[in-house]
Length: 387
Ligand SMILES: Cc1cc2nc3c(=O)[nH]c(=O)nc-3n(C[C@H](O)[C@H](O)[C@H](O)COP(=O)(O)OP(=O)(O)OC[C@H]3O[C@@H](n4cnc5c(N)ncnc54)[C@H](O)[C@@H]3O)c2cc1C
Image (cartoon, rainbow, N blue to C red; front, side, top):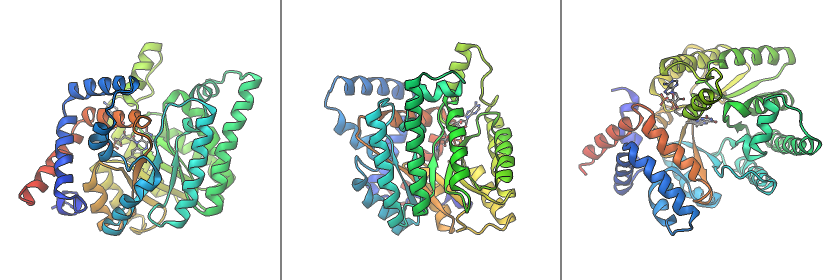
């Protein structure tokens, strides 16, 4: 038996009723029209203030999120760590609030989480999204090399200050910081800013981590360029490597606006690109890798590469990451073998994490094989437990 097939370890933290809920949920999610209609109805009902929060909480929310506040997440974090050797990354998942007060609120939240991480071994990273700290359209304008007005220049300065504050604290507290990647048309501004921060704070080791979305066909070239600059300026590279979550949106926009799609031509090309990136990172010292993936082949390949390059299971330069509520068979079986594993644990008010939840539901319908794999494993475990 291959290690990810062990469902007893995969679901050891789930009670029978939690297992049944997961089975029910993934069966629902498998149905694409249901997800489409469900997302639209939910959005409408929340906007109209209809009382559906409890329904959302008891279904998708509790499966994919840790709670509304950090404190709600603590019992889950402790349980995963003490009983499954799996770490957590507290992910404040409020999205799409394009206002200064919200950016300052997010900043305070991340600063508090960094301090919290310092105290808790079970939370080895802090994380945030660039658009959580500044207006999406501002990132876009800079990425498009358009001139900023005086007000926008001030606004950008505030964004840079927010990024700097979290990176400085992360460096002082020795807590590595993951920065998510978003849509390609705003990402260049984020990449440039994060590279500057790596240069400042990654002198001794990787503290600031950017994210590479390997569904973009230019990312190997970008990684190699960054590597050359890092060697020249003498800093470490921290990278979360993912495939990318906005494929449909990216392709639609490219077609609508008539530019070549930035996305790889097919799934195989994305997979090859992903595997090339993790190989490149393992080949070169002064790089720390957080492999954010639910893909079994890439995960097996990375375990092999770690062996080949003499990187021990618990070496701090190598982490495997999955999302809470998904691919427990990878997380818990890897952790059981002694590898560093962390699950993103999203939290926030139900209404505000809806874009995140809808993305998860859509991803699970659109990603070929993902839901059926979850369902197969859940079925095997239900049978094993004689449910
Ligand atoms: C811990 C963690 C952190 C993450 N952080 C981010 C982040 O910061 N930014 C972000 O964008 N995403 C992020 N993601 C999501 C991630 O990008 C993927 O959407 C998700 O993990 C599914 O990819 P996979 O590697 O698990 O593998 P798989 O399920 O094998 O691959 C699915 C992915 O392959 C790609 N793909 C599918 N079909 C095609 C096709 N026809 N042509 C080209 N490519 C295709 C898409 O990227 C799709 O999501 C994160 C995921 C995890 C686990």
